[in-house]
Length: 108
Image 1 (cartoon, rainbow, N blue to C red):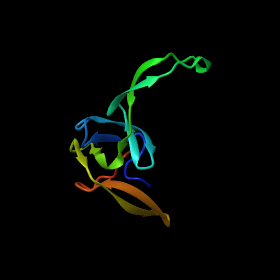
Image 2 (tube, one colour):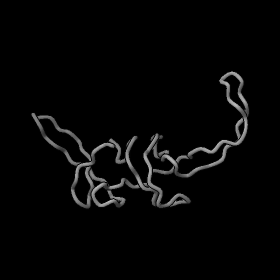
Image 3 (cartoon, helix red, strand yellow):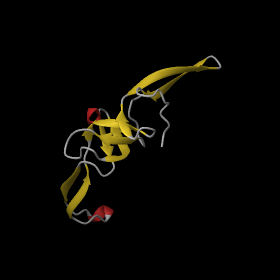
Image 4 (cartoon, rainbow, N blue to C red):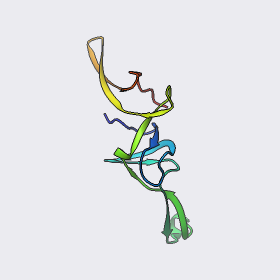
């Protein structure tokens, strides 16, 4: 289990998009793609097979996972995440929690 997962609400802590809040669209190894953050311009060739026009496209680039932090909905601040084990019916369940106030992370 990762500290930051798809569909988590995160805040970018460093880089040109610092302070931006968005939802994680994709997690790729040690990088994440955050909706609306780290926008780049990409030159695209036309591809008639998939009906794609050529030109300059603006899209999100990936950010290293260490440059984003999970947003705590209670405090509205970026927060560190830890792991706890919850035992129910003799089954261990690994859960994420915010280290500042011990609240369990609930997916958006």
